[in-house]
Image (cartoon, rainbow, N blue to C red; front, side, top):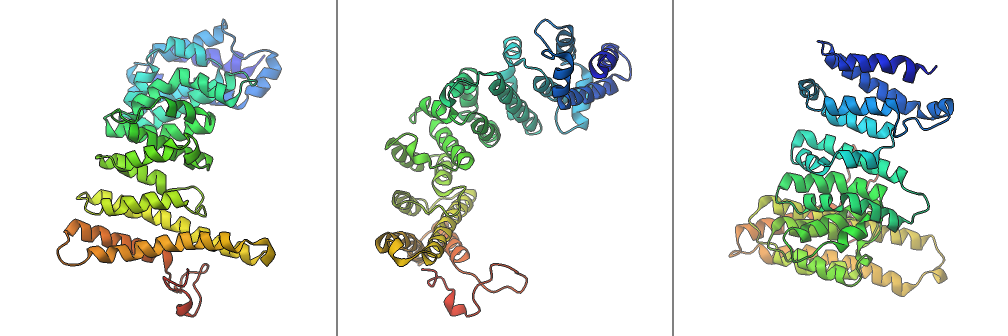
Length: 403
């Protein structure tokens, strides 16, 4: 006799079916039971010698019955107010984890996409919706044949989820757009790394919302994989990037700027093409009236400068550790000149827009850019700093000595 399956569950099931004042506590016990089954699932398989929940099993029918018949119960609203995640989704998530029922659940729960969209459009429900989606695609991955290639696996994901995710990413609802980009894209690429190809293939840069979605998809892919996003679509990638950077929508321009400037590897020196595009973008966006836009512009440029600084310093350290004949003087010179040349250009640019006659917005943005350069490429000795102190001689650490 199995205590969990044959001893405790009949009692828990009976309590959940009864309409008593202890209904809330009964569902708390059900949650604990599901968690324990998940922890012991390997031992339960060994004990029973078969699948834990076959399609026609009574246990599966009872579990499904409890979830679906109580989804609209007022008790769930009470539980939702006392926990971080709404309990309906919590129980559904636990059930999906414990049971291999992805296909069956999608067949029965046809409103899952619309319900997830509603969750992601509401602040306090978005964590629950995101976790539920993550659980579903993880279970889907486990149920798919191991013989499939990554591209084929991503194709199966796309059939179930691509329309839903694209609707969220291209929505006019800012909160839905943000939550889907922040929460859904990272877990999607963690589980189905090739999903990026299916998502990009379905986008049209000339349709509303698609440029912003394109930038968010590539940014998330770059952050998760650590790979360069510029090779995914060949030569058209930089063309689409320039299209996004020239958009009239501030949000789209910032998403594209984040894609251009951010890399999970801070020592990843920007390419010549990246620097060229950014040199064209900055002067065209100095006069923006939006204060948040100026702040985001400064933050993005600071990341870009950190990549140049750390990449050049790393290169210098690597060169010092090698023999002279192993190092190409030309390649070293090109790399350092490319990095220092951009920083010198950006350091000089703000002064051109601080003279009388320029608008407040342009002057403010110019000062933010100058601040980013000084904060990134200079340092001062601090008594509270134990590591990373600059040299004792300040003449050896100035805005120019780094170059």
